Length: 443
Image (cartoon, rainbow, N blue to C red; front, side, top):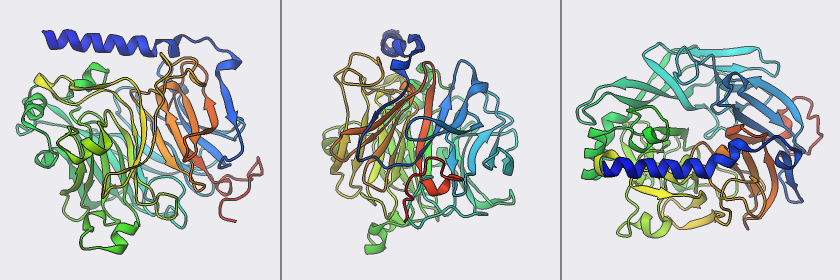
C-alpha cells in the first residue's frame, strides 16, 4: 500500500511538471524557430510529430532551417526515416493504442507506397526499425540505405513465460525481413535472454509479480516488462577494425538495443543471439558504469555513432530521467526529474559530452534560460557531420542543435499540444529540388 501511494505521488509530480506544456495557448512566442545562429549544420529536419489528442493528425513533417514546411506524410506516431531521393520509411495503418492492423511502409515524396510489410495479428510493430546499409537511420558518410535491402524490425508479442513472470507479458522481439516480405533466419526474443540482463533478485521478483512496473504508472501497457524502444545495427566501427578478437562484441552486424523500463543498453550477437555487451541496470557506486556515468533512467535511442562522423564508435543516448527500474513488488526504484544527453566511450565508459539543464521549474516556456530540460518519454539524439548533436526533447515538442561546447545554435518548438517522437536532420541532397538551396554535405 505504501508503495502504491508513493507511486501515485510520483505520478502526480510528473503531471504537475508537464501540465504547463498542455495548457499553453497558441501564440507566436511559443512556436517555431527560436534560435538560428552561425555554426549550424544546415539541412532539413524530419520530425515525427505526435498528437495524442487527435492521433489522425500525427505525421512526418519535413521543415527547413527557418521552420517552413517542405513536405508532410501522414504516419503513425513513431520514427520516420528518410532515404536519399526523398522517400521515407514509417509505420502506418495502425490503430491508436492497440498497434493492431499495422504495417511498415516506404513512401515516395508524394506519399505513394513503394514497399509495405504486413504483420500477422499475433505480433504488433512498435518503436523502431532499420533498413540495411545504414546502421542508425540517419546520414553517415558512405553508408547508404540499400534500395532493396533487408529491414530490421522491433515488434511486440504477448506470451506467457514462467521464468519471467506469473502474468502474461508483452515481449520484445526483433525480426529481420527481406524486401519481398519473407523473413530471414534471424529472430530474437527478449524473454529468452532474461538471465543475461544483469537483473538482481529484487528486480527479478518485481518483474515476476508486476511486469511493466514503472511503465504501467506512466500509462504504458501492463506486462510491457522491458519496453525496448530502439534497435539498430552497430555498423562499421574502429573498435572492431582495430581488434576483431578482443572487440568481437562490436562486430558491425551486431545489434544495439535499450530498455526504457529496466534501464540498460545491450549489444546482441547477430550470430548467436546472446547479449555480449551491456551497461546497467545496476548503476550503484560499486559498478564502473555507476561511478563513471551515474544513473541512466528511462532512456531512449541509444546507438553507436556511425563511422565517418565526429565521435565515431562512441555511444550516444538520450537519458530521459523520470521514473523507471524494478524495486520491491515491481514498483520503480529510480527517479530523476531532468534529462541528460550522454556521449561516452564504450570501452572505458568515460563521458565525452554531457548536456543537461536543471534551472527551470517546469516545461515552460519550452525554450530559453528558464526552460527545464526534461522529457520523461519519447526523444532522440543524432550526431551531425559538423560535430554538433541534434537533440529531440520529445514530450516538450522541442528540437535543438547543440555544439560540442553545449551551446544551442538552432532551436525549434512545435505548436502547443504536439510532441515529437524523434527527429532527424536530413542532407540537402536527399530532398528533391533542395528548395532552400543549402550546400550539399558531400560536396
